[in-house]
Length: 491
Image 1 (cartoon, rainbow, N blue to C red):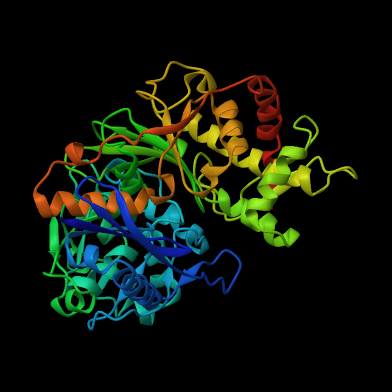
Image 2 (tube, rainbow, N blue to C red):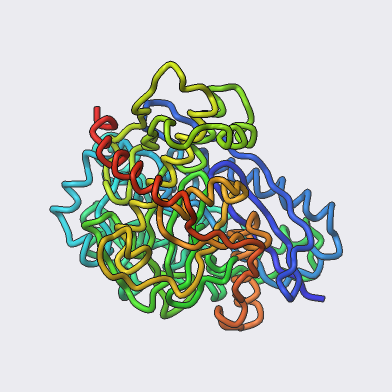
């Protein structure tokens, strides 16, 4: 029996998943990661912490499922996007990696927009969270570090370098740097030059379902593998999640409630809409692209409230059901700024309409509702992507229900809020927790066996379908008031 390994390098944990030829989960392990915030608006991790987490997770997986580990033929990688992993000539990190939710480079976005056609070629507005403005920040504030840059890698690709010795990326993740000509799926010399770089600083590109290299023999021996398996190009976390739930055909998509929130729709071509903060990226396989609306603090907003209340996030989410939905205050979930549709790293969160009656239950409901409303903004912004009723114009509707993935998707109440706010039908898939890791494993299978992405990534069966319900009218009324409260988030 052949097996396949998916490794998902997230922000808070690295997850490793073993699957069989049919994609059924055999075993999984994880290792926790922490984020450092040395100044307000900054968000960093040490790249070597990713390596340590990977080694710990795979050591545990090999101990737990040695027979399945021995049979691994293909490995796929998924990872948090946009992180600026700056390496010197010795391929060692020059500084901590600035993560996707680091907002320090906001002041450099306009200068990059003026320097090159990022919107036309990269298909996206320049936002502080992307890789390019982070490198511009280093160029301006840490010139001694900038002068030593030999290579810039994304987080999962630094992990690949350690696992295979190869400096490789894939178009789905590379699109999030803002250095990719997204329509052509190649690096753009003009966009790199705007940041003082050239193609020598970039990794080789392969499609996510193609072979990028092989696992180092010493590591294969460490984990008891019969042979050094191939390592697929892999994908950015959202494209990998789409592979995990089978959203690999135009019109298919998902809503993700992880640390960040995402409304994702696969497209047959490159379809940018930068004016509305929509991300237009390559998908994980050739000839396929996708659009995304992204909010920076989804489940992270609930985690913030849980820390403030001194209770577990699951307990706080359960409390929300006890609140009156008509009288709860409004919450603007911009704890780290926002992408879609505002493209403003300076926005900050706020409660609006607090009174003496607002207890923990009301605050919990407000936070979850605020995330649902932010996803409604994404639905409105997506070009042909989501709810035409919300957008006030005809839209190319999803081809079916959108899969609901991520830790927050385990909450029935939260999915109901999102369906009511966006007008979308959601389906909670079986095995949603494994989304990106499962997608990575499927890409590993494609690379090892030469299979097509659409043949391997079958749509996930739905465990439950959630449609807009009686709460939609109240949601629409509160959404209008929530949008009017936006100035409260500007300082």
